[in-house]
Amino acid sequence: MTEKAKRTNDPTQWHDRWRDGRIGFHQPEGNPLLRRHLPALGLPRGARLFLPLCGKTGDIGWLMSQGFAVAGSELSRIAVDALFDDLGMEPEVADHGPLTRMSGPGVDIWVGDMFDLTPALLGPVDAVYDRAALVALPDDIRAVYAPHLAAITANAPHLLITFDYDASTVSGPPFPVWQDEISALYVETHDVALLEDAEAKGGIKGVTPAREQVWHLIPR
Ligand SMILES: C[S@@+](CC[C@H](N)C(=O)[O-])C[C@H]1O[C@@H](n2cnc3c(N)ncnc32)[C@H](O)[C@@H]1O
Image: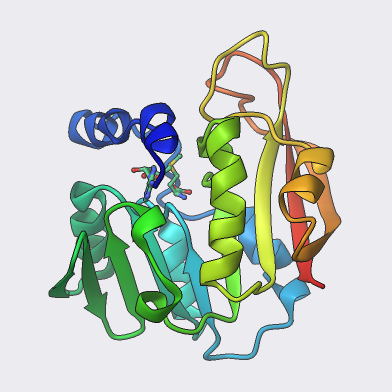
């Protein structure tokens, strides 16, 4: 990660949130939009999905129950320990420089800064599922994140979930991200197709109404 990126995506705020249990973004049952729109990617059973900034999302267990393999990256060891507890697995743990890999059958999570992940460490992936990852990052980091994500996943297709709301009413994360920005971020690698645009239940932090979009990023 560049020095600038380190300044604006301060890892301390995320570690503090996990330590204090301030994880309003977490969906224990996973996200219904994933279930509705994953078929758009046409992935065969056994395909491997990468979940950047994965937390301990219930989507991981659901994807595994559907016969997919999962790879993820997450800063917080607290989150990943809790994920493996939820999965009922005792992970194998291996250090790889600044990252720690925690693995079980069908799942590999890289603990540490996603910007330290390389294609060689991650291995081949068939698709990316980005929920509360791009939108968790401020705009200058999004500009670094998108090309890094495309590079480490060899421009795999994405299912991407974003929010759109009036940013003057509440401060992110999550940050509002709309089609023009997504198209610009992925201009070199993907075409962008909107799959759904719906009212976001509960708005943002219960304060401001929001819409939630599901995008299919199609490799060029
Ligand atoms: C808003 S949460 C979303 C988690 C998950 N995607 C979900 O849907 O529940 C963002 C997560 O990204 C993690 N994170 C933030 N910056 C990161 C980085 N540079 N590398 C890896 N994980 C990061 C945080 O610890 C946090 O768990």
